[in-house]
Length: 164
Image (cartoon, rainbow, N blue to C red):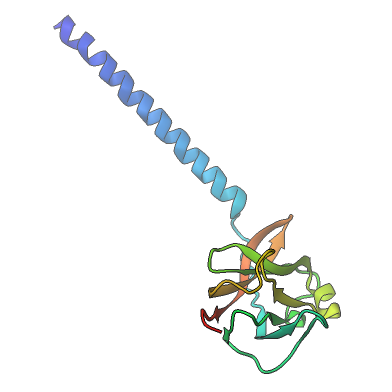
């Protein structure tokens, strides 16, 4: 009888050790969630994206009508109605290409300062390329708190066509 208890001791220690490791992993996961997505951060704000327009990098102005499709050689920029947000809210906007790489943006800054400058959000052609990569480009307008993005306020997608 004594020998059977001794043969179970290593298995028991393994089970207790596994349980401790599982509790540590759970605690680390919860701490990560609380740090990067603290509760109570949802404000209910929505950013109004007016549209995405052809963009002239030389004059820093949009031209022509809004569109959701652009040829590869056509730069584009989004107009966001920054005045639709409370002036003291810290916001930013970023374009991401089809590879989820940031390719342009503004902020973070207060909505009032972006509204005062009429800040457009241009998508820039990556260095070393003569045209944008084809695929979907996503604009994300986010609210910041303590220097970190905490809430998505608006989103827009455009397609950069392979031919053109």
